[in-house]
Image: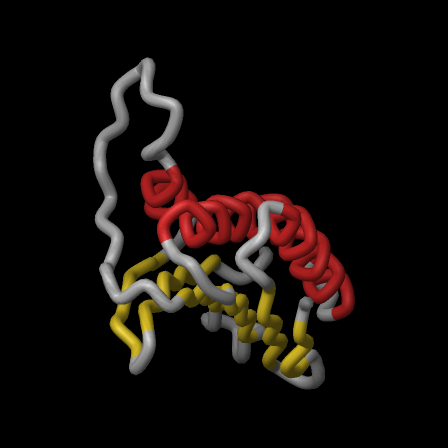
Length: 135
């Protein structure tokens, strides 16, 4: 079951079940929220990166996946996106070989975002990235 935590003001948060259908649903919710904020120009890249991180969570964690967006504030502020899951192991970017079926998600995040990182939480971890504001 999807739980909408908050979608008013500067923050939008959802909890998705550890289910493959959550990837598509998370993409849709993120695009819808960005549209509501007038940030459609960030929709494609944000949806792609959220898809990668939610997929990573599904492959490695056995629990709910939280997605959080923080709207840019000020002319230099960027869109902050966080994906959290209950697995405490922090992921690391790695170089995938040409014939590898996976292993490119964090590389996409690193190449497409202004900044990114990971942090441990009380019951798992968060992978976050920041996108430059449009314009």
